[in-house]
Length: 152
Image (cartoon, rainbow, N blue to C red; front, side, top):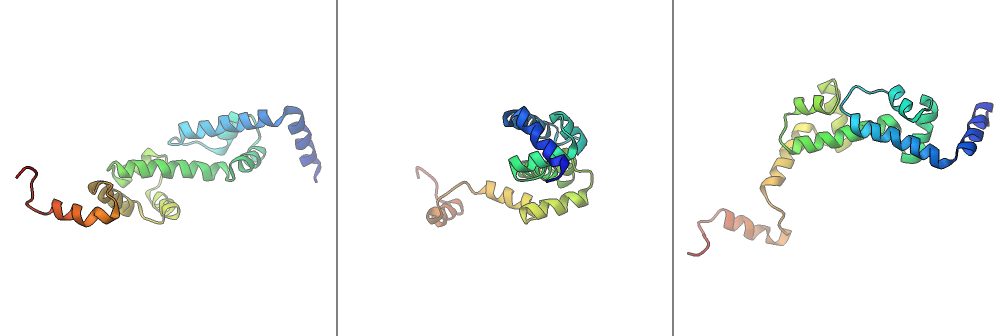
């Protein structure tokens, strides 16, 4: 163990784990609120009052991902909501905090295994057919496409 790591461990013991968790949670809440803005690691770590490197280590120990990975995940999840609501891909890109449509499309596909356009089209198709148990689906389709009307 290096001298630096020993000093951090001593500080952590003195402060207590509760304090560390609270500070990291404050920074996580900052990400949750300001995800669409141009925020960086220095700002996020500053909310927890830790150095960037110490903050990354603590965040990863608590959430099993780096702050940047978490920020990207939050942005992608919000993008999925906006695409389901029918927003344009270009608008969604900027609304969730990405500055490049190309990088947004690449990251979106990496996280969802679908392009934003494909995701939007499929989510719209899911909204057209209400949730119907699979074994009733043929009946649902039959009555939707027939001249059958209630009461006649």
